[in-house]
Length: 338
Image: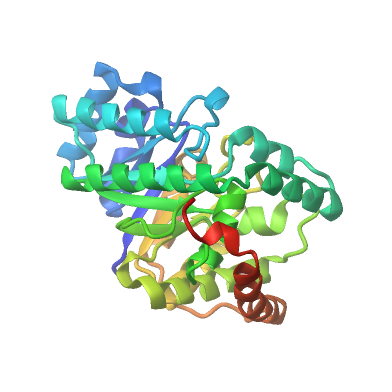
């Protein structure tokens, strides 16, 4: 089946991608979203990006900040992030390596995310998440950050570059409706911004494999199908998905798939839900395998297929979708800009 496919590349250097991964990306018609840091704007990297573009690879820049600044864009560092993206785009245009897309990775600050995920056991995880949510809630800061991201998105798209917003799973559930409380609680404004693609990070290995996780692999795969189905119904072709993990990332201890077959269930589920924009984390996770071509081939040849139904997820989502709007209406103060 024909669908738009790209791979997140967080630790592979652009030169390494252009030298070792380019043949497979080209053979299997896949794009790449390359992590770009403040130190990445060099002539060497410009040459590597040009090589990818000349080969016809769909190139996405994935701007990330220094860890001390939070790494991901959010309410606290949005000014610095917006300035970085503008500088990146201007540098790319000057060097004739403008990307087809900018990926905005909306996750909580890296220090906060690491602390919450490091909790051992469900109770500790929940306690950490509640503490982080309290710390993040700030109506004025939220709407200010949202306005800056909206303006940045408009600026990028005006230059002929598309945008992709990667969002957390719980934010994806909120984006099905009209509320923004969860986004404020996670420091990640995404609603009402005209992104070209919304890509929830529905990582089966993270959802089912972290310490204290109450979800099984079957539950996580059904969540992919259900969430993609709802987002597709609301956003149409703007609905995408990010799947994984095939390799560890910035947290360095994430659980990963051991075989292509494990990944395929969620990919087939997303396609069955009508999603046609898929980003897979990560390129380096595949290139470090003994036979990366087998992974590429399986992913490229994926067809829509319903996953095994999870009654636990179906019931839980039904409850959440009925109860959450009521809670959101009660907690009314966050719904309007100050």
